[in-house]
Length: 144
Image (cartoon, rainbow, N blue to C red; front, side):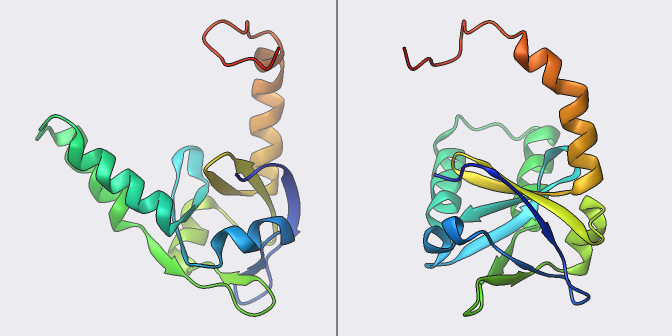
């Protein structure tokens, strides 16, 4: 499970050191891909296999939207292997998509992590934090 928020910096070659807590989870391989709200998703290979199986099990729907979603998701995936120090290199095309320059935030989101431009993450949180605080627990799992 990926949890927490970690402010980090990209180096001049587009490399980023993954949080220590995430490294064991991606030791067997991972992908990064385009995510929603102009961030990058990081997924374990097991999670990619689960998503692929779930898509295959869905009722056949050859709609333009389904084709677009599959193409954008799987077509933007890049297999990544962290180096010995836990760094990954984010390709220029994904850095451009997410607007990544130097300051970034990695956010754990259960079965994936997201890589955000720090300013975009701050704006996203500022816009939605009040709405989140006001959410009712109905429809959301509770721990009580």
